[in-house]
Length: 471
Image 1 (tube, one colour):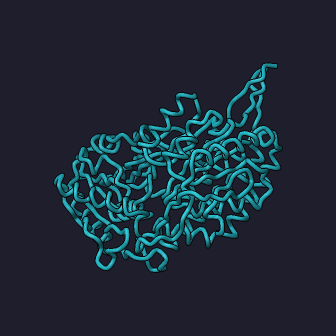
Image 2 (cartoon, rainbow, N blue to C red):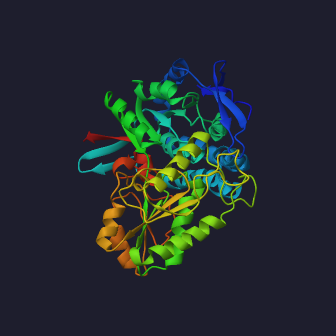
Image 3 (cartoon, rainbow, N blue to C red):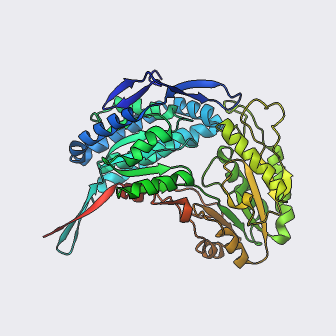
C-alpha cells in the first residue's frame, strides 16, 4: 500500500501533510504504519464531493451499480491474503482465522448482495399506488477496529447498491484494510465522488461527519457510548441512523444439554478474536448443579490455549488491538476478583514470555453475581463469566438482565424446547444448539445494542427511503 499517508476524496488520493496517527501491531507493540490525523476541512471536502456525486449515482441503472460491486468482489478476492495479514497484525486475530473471517466475510457479504440485487423490488404496487424505494442520500459510515473491513463492507456494499454516496471514517486503530478497499474502488468503474474516505480521530473528523447537514444518514458500528452521542447529534438534523453497538451476550445451558459441547462451543465463541467481538458469548448461564463441572471444562480450555504472534500458524489466541484495550481488560479481571467471583483460570498478569505485547490471559470466572459489573459491562476481551441458576425462569431473567441485546445462545437436548426458550430472549439473534451464522439473516440488537439491521435485504433497506406515487 502506497497511499497510507493520504485520504481518498472525489476519486483521487489527496496528500496529507499534517499530524499522523501511529498504527501498532500487538505482539510487541511496534509501530507498523502511520495514517492521517485529518482535520475538519478534509472531511468537509469529502462530504461536498459525495453530495455533488449523489444525483448522478442515485439515477445510475442497477446493472451499472452491480457491475461496480462485481469489480469490488474481484478486488477483494485478489487481495485477500494482503487483507488477512494487515488485519491479523493490527487486531491480533490469528492468521488462519483472519483469512477465513477478516478477509473471507467481506467477500461472502458482497456475494450475497450480488445474488440478491437483480431480483430486489425497488418499486412495487400497493393498491392504486406505486411504492418506490429511493436512496437516502449521502451516508456517513463510521466503523470499528475489531472487524475493520467486514464492518466497512456491511455498510459500503448495500449503500452503493441502494444508490447512496458515501464518506467513510475508518478506525484509526486498524485502518489498513480500508485503504485496500479504497484502492480497489479507485481501480473500478465507480464514478468520482461516490466513495470517499477520510482518516482521523472521532472528535475531529467524526464529529464533522455526524453533524454536517449534507449527510442524511449515519451508519455506525462501535461502542454504546459513542452511539449515544451520534444519536443525539443526528436528532438535531433528523438524520437517519443505523447503530450496531455493544453486547453482553448470554449462553444459556439447560440441564439436558451436552454440557461439554455447550461449554466448549460457548467459550470458543467468547475467545474469538481475543474476545474483541460484540456478539461474544461472555456470560455462561448454567444450572447450579452443573456449575462446578462447567468451570472445570472451561478452565481446562483456557489453560490449554496457545497464545502468541498472530502471524504464527500455530497460535490460537493473539494479542488485543491496543495497549489501552489490554489495560482495560486487565482492570476488569482485577475488578472481578474484588467483586468476589471465583477465578477459575487466567488472571490479570501478563502471560509469561509475552510481557511486551498487548496480551491478556484467557480468563474464566465462576460463581459470578449476575448484577456485578463484570456480568453487566462489556469487557471486550477473553473473559468468561459463569453464572449459576436454579430455574429456567431465572435463567431467562439473567439472560435478559443487562442493557444489551445483541446475541445469545441456548443449548438443550430438545430442539423445540431450546427454540421456545430462545424466543424469550430479548436479543437480535440466538444460536440454538450451535447453529451456524447466516449472512442472509438480519443482524442487529435490542436495547443498548443498537438500532437497525445489517445483512441481506434488511441491510439494504436501511439505506432506502420509501416514496408512494398515488396513481
